[in-house]
Structures are given as C-alpha cells and as structure tokens.
Amino acid sequence: MKKRVIAALVAVTLAGTLTACGGGGAGASNETGTAKTTAAGSGSEDTMLGSESAAVHLKAGTTTAPEGHYVKGLQEMQKLLEEYSHGEMTIDIYPNSQLGNERDMMENVGMGVQEMCLISTGPIPNFVPDFAVLDLPYLFEDARQAYKVLDGEVGASLLEELEGQGIKGVGFWENGFREVTNDKKEIVAPEDLKGMKIRTMENNVHMATYKELGATATPMAWSEIFTALQQGTVDGQENPIAIIESAKVYEVQKYVSMIDLFYSPCVLMIAQSTYDSFTDAQKEAFDKAAEEAKTYQREYSAGYTDEAVQKMKDAGVTVTDVDKAQWKEAAAGVYDELDTLGLNKELVEKIQACK
Image 1 (spheres, rainbow, N blue to C red):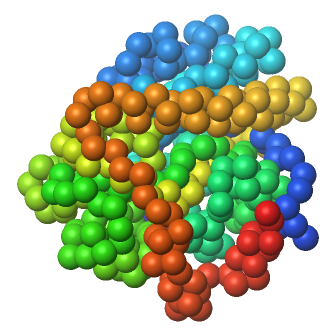
Image 2: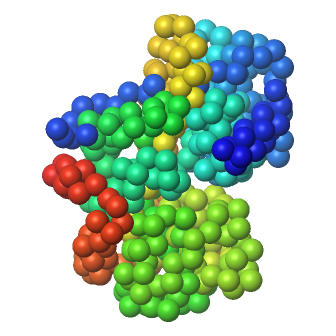
C-alpha cells in the first residue's frame, strides 16, 4: 500500500496537475484542464502536445523514443481524436519514460492519477497472470495470426481482465517480434547463445526461454540497459527492431540476429474512471480514434521495421537471418514448464488452435 501511495504521489507530481479466434477488436482516456503542460525533452511541442483549445487533455505515457512506433501511433490517435470530437478532446504524449517505467505507469493509470499509457505486455502478468501466455516463444507463426487472436475473443477476454485493476484495455497495438543483439559475435544457431548474458524484461517466461537456450537471462529495466551494455554487465539484449533502431541500440551492439523469438504486442490502456466520465459522444470519438490508430500503428510498424533493418545494415551492423525451425525446436522445452510458470494451459491451446 505504501508503494502504491508513493507511486500515486509521484504520478500526481509528474502530471503537474477468449470460443475462439474471430471477430474484430474495438478500441475503447480524462484530464480536464485549462492549461497545456509541456512534454519536456520529448521533442517538438507541436507534435507531442494536443490542441491547446481542447477542453479535455488526456496525458498518455510511454517509454519509447519520440521517433518510435509507439509514439507515431499515439500521434495518429491524437489527430483522429481531435477530429472526431470536433476539437473537444486531445492527447498529450509523454515519451522516453517521462511519466515513469511501464509498471509505474500501469499502476498509476489503475489508480486514476494518470489517464493513459501505451506499454509492452512485460509488466502486465504481475497484475493479470493470464497475460503471461502471450510471452511464450513462437506462440504465433506470424503477425497475421497474432492479429487474429488479439483482435478476437481471446484478446477481448484478456483486456477485460484489466478491469480488476481499474483499467480499461483499449486494444493491442504493435511492438513486434523480438530479436537478439550483442557486440561479441554473430549469433546464428541457438548454441551460439550458450554462456552469454542477455538482458531481458523482468518477465519469467522470457527468462525461462533464454535459460532453455543456454544463455544467462539478466532481467533489467529499460532505463538501465545502455549503462549495462557499455560496462559489460550484459553481453546483449533483446527487443523488436523498431526499438533497437529508434533507441540507437545498434550503435553499441553490432550484431543483430532475426530470431523472432517472441511476438510482443503492446497494450493501450486508459483509466476506467476516466473513460466512465466521458459522455456517449466522447466515448464514440475515443473508440473510433483508438481503433483506427491501432490499424495505422501496426502498418507503420511493419514498414518501419523493414526500413530500420536496412538502415542498420548501412551503418555496418551485421543483421543475421536464422533457421527459425531450429530455434523453435530449441525453445520448445518451455512448453513443458507451463505449470511451473503458472500459465493457463487452456488459453495456450485456444491460441494454438487459431491458425
């Protein structure tokens, strides 16, 4: 309780003021104020902060860089929300962990002291255990299958579980397939990872998977990663290409292996109390903007990934394609640990049935 109170105080200070597969997902955030807060250090004020004349400003936090795919999606939603609400509503975007790390932001949204956040699924199993299923290696064959699951009944049931945390899950946006980087050697086969220290999210399934592959998984907050890489605390890290490129990880890690180990969605969240405070017209505008921005952000992410890979190659980075069947076989032992990891077997089977 003490921790939650502290987190709430910090956020206030910062604020300054599941059947089967089919179906479509719907996007389903309210700081009402007269002043427009500056998103310090986040890039151009014009691109991060919404229309000054809007009556409803929704503060949305994320950990990624202003140039990243999370922020691009939020900017599209900002534009659409202003259009569909006839200028009444907007979003003020705070990138680069300005409102805290992902766990902090999720807690603060749940307590209603921050309106919105767009975060990876990494910390969510700490609050909603079923989300951990999404962290299994090679759970999805490709993005098409992932969208089918996440925009269908499975995804809807997961988002509904967030209600117990005071959060309305708006939808699953794109993070991407996670690749591994290092600055020691080219990683082609799973055995190349043996003995290497790889930074992972603070995520038991990811850690168990890297252990299965022979690496030493070192959980670490995103904000600590560059120091750890530079000081040799870890040999490498794993993230989607969009993160690796936009955060300039490739500048200190010259080997990137396209292992597609995990498909990593991100989740747009809004405080349930904020959403409940909207009028019916405001909810309609918010839902429509969120759904269209989700589609835009996924398409942007796919294109951005292709461009980022080429950019890294041009910068002298060794980008290695691998035999994914070999990696999938090497990681399969994690599925024998579902009980140990506390994962929902029925949910795993439902997802695997969605082809």
